[in-house]
Image (cartoon, rainbow over all chains, first blue to last red; front, side):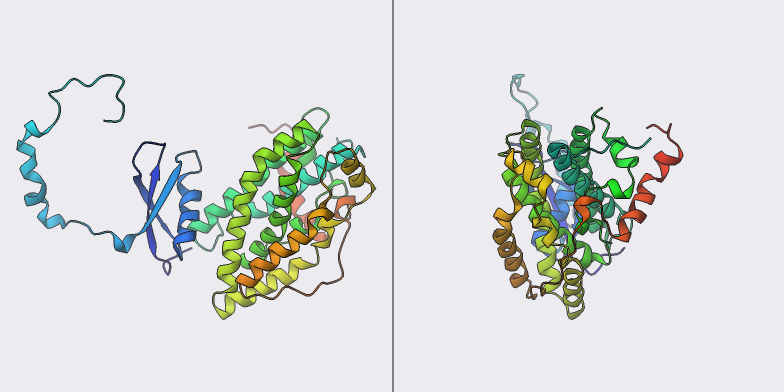
Length: 95
Length: 251
Protein backbone atom coordinates (compact mmCIF):
# COMPACT_ATOMS: atom_id res chain seq x y z
CA UNK A 1 0.00 0.00 0.00
CA UNK A 2 1.59 3.27 -1.08
CA UNK A 3 -0.69 6.04 -2.33
CA UNK A 4 2.46 7.97 -3.22
CA UNK A 5 0.97 9.03 -6.52
CA UNK A 6 -1.87 10.83 -4.72
CA UNK A 7 -1.27 14.32 -3.33
CA UNK A 8 -1.17 14.89 0.42
CA UNK A 9 -3.90 16.93 2.18
CA UNK A 10 -3.71 18.49 5.64
CA UNK A 11 -6.78 17.79 7.78
CA UNK A 12 -8.40 20.23 10.24
CA UNK A 13 -11.23 19.22 12.57
CA UNK A 14 -13.67 21.45 14.46
CA UNK A 15 -14.44 19.41 17.56
CA UNK A 16 -17.61 21.35 18.39
CA UNK A 17 -19.47 24.48 17.45
CA UNK A 18 -17.72 27.68 18.52
CA UNK A 19 -14.22 26.22 18.55
CA UNK A 20 -11.64 26.74 15.84
CA UNK A 21 -10.60 23.99 13.42
CA UNK A 22 -7.41 22.30 14.64
CA UNK A 23 -4.81 20.51 12.59
CA UNK A 24 -5.01 16.77 13.29
CA UNK A 25 -2.94 15.12 10.56
CA UNK A 26 -2.96 14.40 6.85
CA UNK A 27 -4.36 11.99 4.24
CA UNK A 28 -3.55 11.01 0.67
CA UNK A 29 -6.38 11.46 -1.84
CA UNK A 30 -6.76 11.99 -5.60
CA UNK A 31 -8.98 15.07 -5.23
CA UNK A 32 -10.67 17.38 -2.71
CA UNK A 33 -13.94 15.42 -2.44
CA UNK A 34 -12.22 12.12 -1.64
CA UNK A 35 -9.78 13.94 0.65
CA UNK A 36 -12.81 14.96 2.74
CA UNK A 37 -14.10 11.36 2.69
CA UNK A 38 -10.70 10.01 3.75
CA UNK A 39 -10.41 12.66 6.46
CA UNK A 40 -13.91 11.77 7.72
CA UNK A 41 -13.10 8.05 7.81
CA UNK A 42 -9.65 8.50 9.36
CA UNK A 43 -10.08 11.32 11.88
CA UNK A 44 -13.76 11.52 12.91
CA UNK A 45 -14.63 7.85 13.53
CA UNK A 46 -14.96 8.41 17.28
CA UNK A 47 -17.11 11.56 17.25
CA UNK A 48 -14.08 13.84 17.18
CA UNK A 49 -15.68 16.47 14.99
CA UNK A 50 -18.61 18.44 13.61
CA UNK A 51 -16.77 20.05 10.69
CA UNK A 52 -13.76 19.25 8.51
CA UNK A 53 -11.34 21.24 6.39
CA UNK A 54 -8.85 19.73 3.98
CA UNK A 55 -6.09 21.80 2.37
CA UNK A 56 -3.52 20.63 -0.19
CA UNK A 57 -0.29 20.26 1.77
CA UNK A 58 1.60 21.92 -1.09
CA UNK A 59 -0.46 25.09 -0.50
CA UNK A 60 0.77 25.46 3.09
CA UNK A 61 3.42 28.19 3.37
CA UNK A 62 5.74 27.46 6.29
CA UNK A 63 8.22 29.65 8.12
CA UNK A 64 11.89 28.84 7.68
CA UNK A 65 13.30 26.85 10.64
CA UNK A 66 16.62 28.68 10.15
CA UNK A 67 14.82 31.93 10.98
CA UNK A 68 13.25 30.60 14.16
CA UNK A 69 15.66 32.57 16.30
CA UNK A 70 14.88 35.99 14.88
CA UNK A 71 11.17 35.22 14.45
CA UNK A 72 10.25 33.73 17.81
CA UNK A 73 12.91 34.27 20.46
CA UNK A 74 12.34 38.05 20.92
CA UNK A 75 8.85 37.33 22.33
CA UNK A 76 10.28 35.28 25.19
CA UNK A 77 11.37 38.32 27.22
CA UNK A 78 8.07 40.23 26.92
CA UNK A 79 5.85 38.65 29.52
CA UNK A 80 3.80 41.87 29.74
CA UNK A 81 2.20 40.81 26.45
CA UNK A 82 0.50 37.85 28.17
CA UNK A 83 -2.95 38.57 29.60
CA UNK A 84 -2.03 36.77 32.80
CA UNK A 85 -2.57 39.84 35.01
CA UNK A 86 -6.37 39.67 34.66
CA UNK A 87 -8.79 37.45 36.56
CA UNK A 88 -10.84 35.39 34.09
CA UNK A 89 -14.34 34.42 35.27
CA UNK A 90 -14.85 30.67 35.60
CA UNK A 91 -17.81 30.84 33.20
CA UNK A 92 -15.57 31.87 30.32
CA UNK A 93 -14.33 28.79 28.52
CA UNK A 94 -11.75 28.21 25.84
CA UNK A 95 -9.50 31.22 26.36
CA UNK B 1 -27.24 -26.29 18.53
CA UNK B 2 -28.97 -24.99 15.41
CA UNK B 3 -31.05 -21.85 15.67
CA UNK B 4 -34.79 -22.24 15.16
CA UNK B 5 -35.98 -20.89 11.81
CA UNK B 6 -39.41 -19.37 11.66
CA UNK B 7 -41.60 -18.16 8.83
CA UNK B 8 -43.18 -15.37 10.82
CA UNK B 9 -43.10 -12.49 8.28
CA UNK B 10 -41.64 -9.96 10.70
CA UNK B 11 -38.87 -12.31 11.82
CA UNK B 12 -38.21 -13.23 8.20
CA UNK B 13 -37.87 -9.55 7.31
CA UNK B 14 -35.42 -9.02 10.19
CA UNK B 15 -33.38 -12.02 9.01
CA UNK B 16 -33.34 -10.86 5.38
CA UNK B 17 -32.12 -7.38 6.24
CA UNK B 18 -29.88 -8.61 9.07
CA UNK B 19 -28.22 -11.27 6.91
CA UNK B 20 -27.72 -8.74 4.09
CA UNK B 21 -25.87 -6.46 6.49
CA UNK B 22 -23.92 -9.27 8.15
CA UNK B 23 -22.72 -10.89 4.93
CA UNK B 24 -21.86 -7.56 3.28
CA UNK B 25 -20.00 -6.47 6.42
CA UNK B 26 -18.04 -9.73 6.49
CA UNK B 27 -17.19 -9.38 2.80
CA UNK B 28 -15.96 -5.81 3.27
CA UNK B 29 -13.90 -6.82 6.29
CA UNK B 30 -11.92 -9.17 4.03
CA UNK B 31 -10.30 -6.01 2.64
CA UNK B 32 -8.82 -5.15 6.04
CA UNK B 33 -5.04 -4.92 5.57
CA UNK B 34 -5.39 -5.42 1.79
CA UNK B 35 -6.78 -2.05 0.64
CA UNK B 36 -5.11 -0.42 -2.36
CA UNK B 37 -3.93 2.44 -0.11
CA UNK B 38 -4.07 2.99 3.64
CA UNK B 39 -6.88 5.57 3.47
CA UNK B 40 -9.09 3.28 1.37
CA UNK B 41 -8.35 0.38 3.71
CA UNK B 42 -9.73 2.46 6.59
CA UNK B 43 -12.75 3.56 4.53
CA UNK B 44 -13.68 -0.03 3.69
CA UNK B 45 -13.25 -1.12 7.32
CA UNK B 46 -15.60 1.70 8.38
CA UNK B 47 -18.21 0.57 5.86
CA UNK B 48 -17.86 -3.00 7.15
CA UNK B 49 -18.33 -1.90 10.76
CA UNK B 50 -21.46 0.11 9.89
CA UNK B 51 -23.02 -2.95 8.26
CA UNK B 52 -22.02 -5.31 11.08
CA UNK B 53 -23.47 -2.84 13.59
CA UNK B 54 -26.77 -2.90 11.70
CA UNK B 55 -26.67 -6.70 11.58
CA UNK B 56 -26.16 -6.81 15.35
CA UNK B 57 -29.35 -4.81 15.92
CA UNK B 58 -31.45 -6.70 13.37
CA UNK B 59 -30.35 -10.22 14.32
CA UNK B 60 -30.62 -9.41 18.02
CA UNK B 61 -34.24 -8.44 17.40
CA UNK B 62 -34.85 -11.52 15.22
CA UNK B 63 -33.57 -13.97 17.85
CA UNK B 64 -36.22 -15.13 20.30
CA UNK B 65 -33.71 -14.93 23.15
CA UNK B 66 -32.12 -11.71 21.88
CA UNK B 67 -28.90 -13.59 21.07
CA UNK B 68 -28.02 -12.40 17.57
CA UNK B 69 -24.60 -14.07 17.75
CA UNK B 70 -26.30 -17.46 17.80
CA UNK B 71 -28.09 -16.61 14.54
CA UNK B 72 -24.90 -15.26 12.99
CA UNK B 73 -22.55 -18.08 13.96
CA UNK B 74 -24.69 -21.18 14.42
CA UNK B 75 -26.88 -21.26 11.33
CA UNK B 76 -25.95 -23.18 8.20
CA UNK B 77 -25.85 -21.73 4.70
CA UNK B 78 -29.38 -22.90 3.78
CA UNK B 79 -30.82 -20.89 6.68
CA UNK B 80 -29.32 -17.57 5.56
CA UNK B 81 -31.83 -15.16 3.98
CA UNK B 82 -29.49 -12.58 2.47
CA UNK B 83 -29.75 -11.57 -1.18
CA UNK B 84 -27.18 -13.09 -3.56
CA UNK B 85 -25.64 -9.70 -4.40
CA UNK B 86 -24.02 -9.16 -0.99
CA UNK B 87 -22.32 -12.58 -0.90
CA UNK B 88 -20.55 -12.07 -4.24
CA UNK B 89 -16.75 -12.10 -3.98
CA UNK B 90 -14.84 -8.85 -3.59
CA UNK B 91 -12.87 -9.32 -6.82
CA UNK B 92 -10.79 -6.21 -7.34
CA UNK B 93 -11.54 -2.80 -5.78
CA UNK B 94 -13.80 -1.85 -8.71
CA UNK B 95 -15.90 -5.01 -8.34
CA UNK B 96 -16.30 -4.30 -4.61
CA UNK B 97 -17.38 -0.72 -5.38
CA UNK B 98 -19.84 -1.93 -8.04
CA UNK B 99 -21.44 -4.32 -5.54
CA UNK B 100 -21.57 -1.59 -2.90
CA UNK B 101 -23.16 0.93 -5.28
CA UNK B 102 -25.80 -1.56 -6.43
CA UNK B 103 -26.66 -2.78 -2.93
CA UNK B 104 -26.49 0.39 -0.83
CA UNK B 105 -28.47 2.47 -3.37
CA UNK B 106 -31.26 -0.11 -2.88
CA UNK B 107 -30.67 -0.28 0.88
CA UNK B 108 -30.92 3.51 1.18
CA UNK B 109 -34.20 3.72 -0.78
CA UNK B 110 -35.58 0.91 1.41
CA UNK B 111 -34.45 2.47 4.70
CA UNK B 112 -35.93 5.86 3.76
CA UNK B 113 -39.32 4.15 3.54
CA UNK B 114 -38.73 1.80 6.46
CA UNK B 115 -38.61 4.87 8.74
CA UNK B 116 -42.41 4.94 8.19
CA UNK B 117 -42.82 1.31 9.26
CA UNK B 118 -45.71 0.56 11.62
CA UNK B 119 -43.21 -1.51 13.61
CA UNK B 120 -41.53 0.62 16.30
CA UNK B 121 -38.22 -1.29 16.25
CA UNK B 122 -37.92 -1.22 12.46
CA UNK B 123 -38.79 2.47 12.28
CA UNK B 124 -36.21 3.40 14.93
CA UNK B 125 -33.61 1.14 13.32
CA UNK B 126 -34.20 2.77 9.94
CA UNK B 127 -33.86 6.30 11.34
CA UNK B 128 -30.40 5.38 12.64
CA UNK B 129 -29.18 3.30 9.70
CA UNK B 130 -30.39 5.59 6.90
CA UNK B 131 -27.73 8.20 7.75
CA UNK B 132 -24.94 5.62 7.75
CA UNK B 133 -26.05 4.19 4.44
CA UNK B 134 -26.41 7.64 2.83
CA UNK B 135 -22.64 7.98 3.27
CA UNK B 136 -22.09 4.50 1.78
CA UNK B 137 -24.02 5.54 -1.33
CA UNK B 138 -22.03 8.77 -1.62
CA UNK B 139 -18.67 7.02 -1.33
CA UNK B 140 -19.65 4.28 -3.80
CA UNK B 141 -20.84 6.96 -6.25
CA UNK B 142 -17.63 8.97 -5.84
CA UNK B 143 -15.47 5.94 -6.58
CA UNK B 144 -17.65 4.69 -9.45
CA UNK B 145 -17.32 8.07 -11.17
CA UNK B 146 -13.57 8.29 -10.59
CA UNK B 147 -12.85 4.76 -11.79
CA UNK B 148 -15.29 4.93 -14.72
CA UNK B 149 -14.00 8.35 -15.77
CA UNK B 150 -10.36 7.54 -14.93
CA UNK B 151 -7.84 5.58 -16.96
CA UNK B 152 -8.64 2.98 -19.64
CA UNK B 153 -7.76 0.25 -17.11
CA UNK B 154 -9.90 1.66 -14.28
CA UNK B 155 -12.87 2.12 -16.66
CA UNK B 156 -12.50 -1.46 -17.90
CA UNK B 157 -12.33 -2.85 -14.36
CA UNK B 158 -15.35 -0.78 -13.23
CA UNK B 159 -17.39 -2.00 -16.23
CA UNK B 160 -16.40 -5.61 -15.49
CA UNK B 161 -17.34 -5.20 -11.83
CA UNK B 162 -20.79 -3.92 -12.79
CA UNK B 163 -21.21 -6.70 -15.33
CA UNK B 164 -20.42 -9.33 -12.68
CA UNK B 165 -22.94 -8.00 -10.15
CA UNK B 166 -25.73 -6.83 -12.47
CA UNK B 167 -27.56 -10.18 -12.70
CA UNK B 168 -28.23 -10.08 -8.95
CA UNK B 169 -30.16 -6.77 -9.04
CA UNK B 170 -33.62 -8.19 -9.95
CA UNK B 171 -33.66 -10.25 -6.75
CA UNK B 172 -33.69 -6.99 -4.75
CA UNK B 173 -37.14 -6.20 -6.18
CA UNK B 174 -38.64 -9.69 -5.89
CA UNK B 175 -41.72 -9.92 -3.63
CA UNK B 176 -42.62 -13.41 -2.46
CA UNK B 177 -45.51 -14.43 -0.19
CA UNK B 178 -43.54 -13.90 3.02
CA UNK B 179 -42.44 -10.38 2.10
CA UNK B 180 -45.94 -9.61 0.80
CA UNK B 181 -47.32 -10.50 4.23
CA UNK B 182 -44.84 -8.09 5.87
CA UNK B 183 -45.82 -5.40 3.34
CA UNK B 184 -49.54 -5.99 3.99
CA UNK B 185 -48.92 -5.67 7.74
CA UNK B 186 -47.29 -2.26 7.18
CA UNK B 187 -43.95 -3.52 8.48
CA UNK B 188 -42.00 -3.39 5.22
CA UNK B 189 -42.04 -1.13 2.16
CA UNK B 190 -42.77 -2.74 -1.22
CA UNK B 191 -39.45 -2.54 -3.13
CA UNK B 192 -41.27 -2.51 -6.48
CA UNK B 193 -42.48 1.00 -5.59
CA UNK B 194 -38.94 2.38 -5.88
CA UNK B 195 -37.53 0.21 -8.67
CA UNK B 196 -37.84 3.02 -11.24
CA UNK B 197 -36.18 5.44 -8.83
CA UNK B 198 -33.40 2.90 -8.24
CA UNK B 199 -32.73 2.39 -11.95
CA UNK B 200 -32.75 6.15 -12.54
CA UNK B 201 -30.27 6.71 -9.68
CA UNK B 202 -27.88 4.01 -10.93
CA UNK B 203 -28.26 5.30 -14.49
CA UNK B 204 -27.34 8.83 -13.39
CA UNK B 205 -24.16 7.63 -11.64
CA UNK B 206 -23.10 5.53 -14.62
CA UNK B 207 -23.77 8.42 -17.02
CA UNK B 208 -21.54 10.69 -14.92
CA UNK B 209 -18.92 7.92 -14.90
CA UNK B 210 -19.17 7.54 -18.71
CA UNK B 211 -20.10 3.89 -18.23
CA UNK B 212 -22.78 1.93 -20.07
CA UNK B 213 -25.71 0.53 -18.10
CA UNK B 214 -25.10 -3.25 -18.39
CA UNK B 215 -27.53 -5.23 -20.53
CA UNK B 216 -30.10 -7.10 -18.44
CA UNK B 217 -29.09 -10.71 -17.95
CA UNK B 218 -31.09 -13.72 -16.84
CA UNK B 219 -31.91 -12.84 -13.22
CA UNK B 220 -30.59 -15.14 -10.52
CA UNK B 221 -32.95 -15.48 -7.57
CA UNK B 222 -33.25 -17.62 -4.47
CA UNK B 223 -31.11 -16.09 -1.75
CA UNK B 224 -34.16 -15.07 0.29
CA UNK B 225 -35.19 -18.75 0.37
CA UNK B 226 -31.74 -20.04 1.27
CA UNK B 227 -30.59 -21.00 -2.25
CA UNK B 228 -27.15 -19.41 -2.29
CA UNK B 229 -24.15 -19.29 -4.59
CA UNK B 230 -21.11 -21.36 -3.70
CA UNK B 231 -19.43 -18.22 -2.36
CA UNK B 232 -21.55 -17.93 0.80
CA UNK B 233 -20.43 -21.29 2.19
CA UNK B 234 -16.79 -20.25 2.04
CA UNK B 235 -17.58 -16.90 3.67
CA UNK B 236 -19.48 -18.57 6.50
CA UNK B 237 -16.72 -21.15 7.03
CA UNK B 238 -14.26 -18.34 7.76
CA UNK B 239 -16.75 -16.27 9.78
CA UNK B 240 -18.12 -19.15 11.88
CA UNK B 241 -14.97 -21.21 12.40
CA UNK B 242 -13.96 -19.81 15.77
CA UNK B 243 -17.27 -19.85 17.68
CA UNK B 244 -18.11 -23.30 16.29
CA UNK B 245 -14.73 -24.79 17.16
CA UNK B 246 -14.56 -23.11 20.55
CA UNK B 247 -18.20 -22.73 21.68
CA UNK B 248 -17.13 -21.42 25.08
CA UNK B 249 -14.97 -18.65 23.62
CA UNK B 250 -15.84 -15.23 25.03
CA UNK B 251 -14.47 -11.71 24.71
